[in-house]
Length: 104
Image (cartoon, rainbow, N blue to C red; front, side):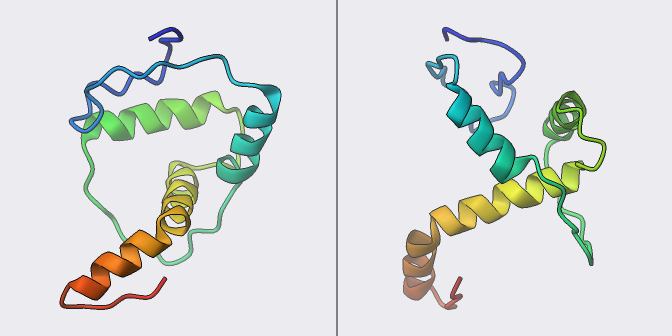
């Protein structure tokens, strides 16, 4: 890894391989900030279970962004929404093949 810093996710089972990273361009930083580091009103909530190490890493990460209105829940919600939108066609195709159909 050329830029090994805070976001080393090897303790997470799905992120065991090293990834080559470069220093991001200013446009990439701005795009990331605009998409993921914005407060989000979570509304009605429901807990989910994730590894404690991941929650600890997310808590530290969100604190480092220095945005007092950004919460772990808002950050994770923004990530999940982005994932669902980016993978909408694949998710819909897989659910079509399954026993339930969910349209995103």
